[in-house]
Length: 92
Image (cartoon, rainbow, N blue to C red; front, top):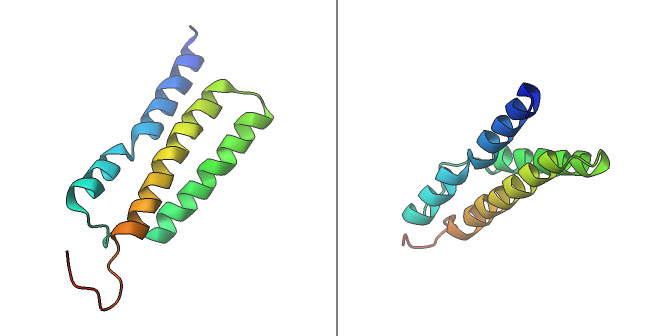
């Protein structure tokens, strides 16, 4: 494997797993009030565009990395929707 491909694979792995600790933390705490929906939403849209780009150029590393990252980000956004306190709701 050439060094450039290895570099790309390591970068894809690291950026793909970067938000997994946040998902785990969200599940443990059942609290996401300190997270920015705008930040996670924008990042998720960017990942979706990267996935489209990977499909367009038929790059399996880009496709696989972004399918995984998109899944993690959708889970993060779901947690934000699920765990946010609604106005007037009693704390859990």
